[in-house]
Length: 527
Image (cartoon, rainbow, N blue to C red; front, side, top):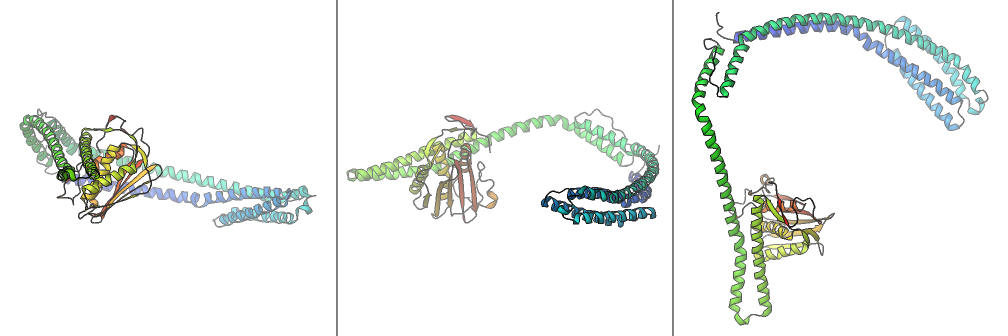
């Protein structure tokens, strides 16, 4: 059997065949549908509207007769006026239905029946109009007789409308039968065309399958077996001169390469996995060590300087020092020692965050006093900064862990001082809002680039514009974690070059489901 030199020609031939077949079947179906549409147009454009308008006339005329009876039997002026309004509205609806029916095409017999109904209805309306025009007091003695006198005219009009409706239903049924017959004819012809097209497509399918599909599926099966390192396969079609033959020969090359690489693949994957695990472990250790050294060296320097300065001052004073000055400087030394203790706690908490647990000890305390203590501490640490407090209430009582919150506020104020070169103004505000304490720390420093705001609270992340300023990227992550443990939230608003404002909202009562228990360690999910 002579093998084809190229499958492009055969594919083009098959596609052209399908395209031509689609056009032929489509044109044939469109022709049959056009015949059916011509027959069904009468139903859509004539009989359906006719039926709707005649139904409306039947309903409205019946309602008008009932409204006339209500008018005749009305006992009060309100009932009389309501029935008159209803009859006027029904008159308008009847007139609208009549106009709709008259705008359609009708046969001579239908037009004759409709003219008869219209005349009889006009006669009934004249009688009913004369009766309604009389006041309730004038017609009350003979209300039943008046209603009976108009019944003959109404029955005649109703009978004429019934005949017209019956004639319309009969004609519509005949049109529907013609449409059904046209549909059956069109359907049988289209089904015959589809059957012929289906047979032709089946023949084309077997042709394509024999020429292309079967060889391609065989090569695909070989590739799947090679992908599972099964090299014991027989590749067919290498002798063909078309594209499939080229693919078969390529699969043979792939088979040879797979045999050569299979032996090394497992060992390389195992070694790579081990190296990746070790590298990740070493990176984590190096990062933790670097963060600890950087944080300790930076944060401990200031309180140690304060302690050393005041101690030297006391040593130089000897006996000349006053008792109050000794007490004052001793208090500052103790404050610096407390600051160092707080920093140690902060470092420990940062480590606990990394390890997945943090100690949470809620108690009742005054947030205003805590804020004032933090501000006083940083006035001593950074005397060149302008820290302004706006604490509106005398007391801000709340439940929480004051040590953790001291670290949060210290971090926020430390950042405000650190990133405000030249000692700019820093505003600290606090107030209550719906059982929450709202704290704001605003500076007018370098600000945060817009691209960095979304990742600002991520662990170890620092802004792109703070190069050269000491920091670890743990402070804001710790702040957000502590605030979330308290059931609160923290937000930042910043514009580069204009400063930043951090807003903290904390509930005044400790959450019972905060994820951290009093006096115990709490597991934290990595953010």
